[in-house]
Length: 215
Ligand code: 0O2
Picture 1 (cartoon, rainbow, N blue to C red):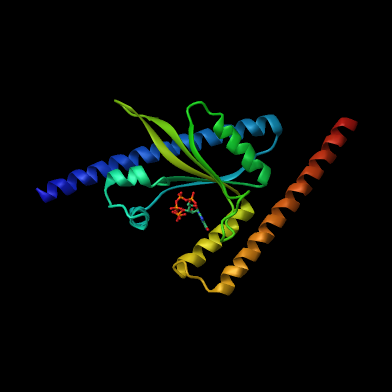
Picture 2 (spheres, rainbow, N blue to C red; picture 1 turned 90 degrees about the vertical axis):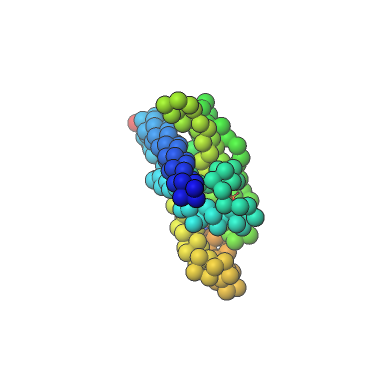
């Protein structure tokens, strides 16, 4: 009896993961198409690269426990919004808002929530643009709307977030004060760098436009 129950749970979980994987593929393809079209029109790629992942079951269980929920498949699907996650890395901050707008304009994507940690960075110094969306996945006998968390950030923001994540993992969230301070200072440098690189890029774009107009 118990074994049968466990088997059917595994079966259900595999089906859930299959659907989340399909959702990741959908969003990935959409982003690739938008990037190709953008390249065609503007001769420039707003997306540097894309990473996607399915959250590990350990990590899902940990998150549920942190929020005080029992570890059932139902609770996972209901309360863990980033089981399917996509990270879009771009060169400039302006690209982030351009990509977010292009996603928002897709008819079949429904935006549930947006968290702009660029305008309002986290206390840790974390910056990134988060969109929680649903995308329809067409199965043989039904269509399911699947949640995907899209994180959009610059290369520099991503560099910072990777190191900060590693440090916090190592210290289990309790990094020494001087390390935290150093990270916040680095986050400030990331913003300054992003701003300067964007200004430089604008300046170069304006110059090459002048050249083209003059020719
Ligand atoms: P992992 O390992 O990246 O999957 P939550 O606040 O986590 O209960 P919610 O609403 O999903 O729930 O929060 P949020 O802030 O929208 O998104 C959480 C995700 O953003 C995290 O996922 C990280 O990927 C990223 N993130 C948020 N804050 C920080 C931060 O201070 N530093 C770094 N490096 N990343 C951050 P997970 O599940 O925490 O981790």
